[in-house]
Image 1 (cartoon, rainbow, N blue to C red):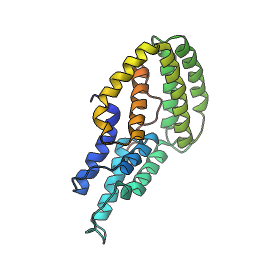
Image 2: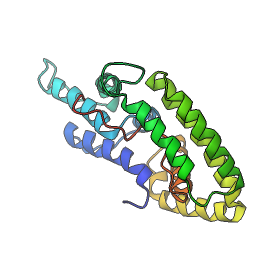
Image 3: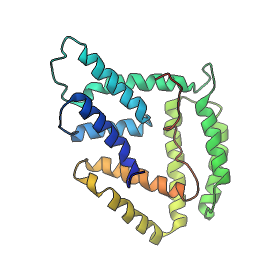
Image 4: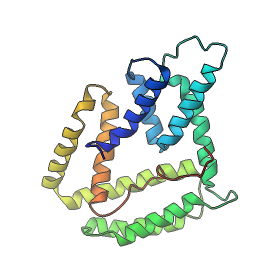
Length: 224
């Protein structure tokens, strides 16, 4: 794992797009913000890369194939198409087949119930969230649940940070900041802030053997 794994997603998208486009130029601020949009929507990296591949393959066989692709935005429609196939394959909300996402929510509930070394705020909230997850597993669209999970995780991270105390959090923030220093010159401030926030959440949750509360890593067979 790299020193700043939260940036790996962005770097992988950039490297793949630049290599396939055949142009040495790196991503612009607008393109980094587009990747941020995909990451905040919890789209798995393989889904994003599939959309980029589909867009560039179509361009290579199209009538305007001699025209150079100037921006990652050219691939946005195909990325969304790949994302929609992924969402449907997860079958959230009662579609035929195994309800992969609902099963993941029940797994998150169990993780919260088994969390280790929680402080008073974290322990109390973990049990509350576990119950909410068990109830919510009965329904809801994938997009709704993605947003809702982010809200739950935000509440939990705040509680864990409060239990950790100011001194420990200051040391953690400094460590995260140092790990992302090389990206500050390449990415817009809002993207770097997202990386900082995600790294903070991951590290706090990992310290209690908890996963990110996200459907980001769910697989949907070969549907994408």
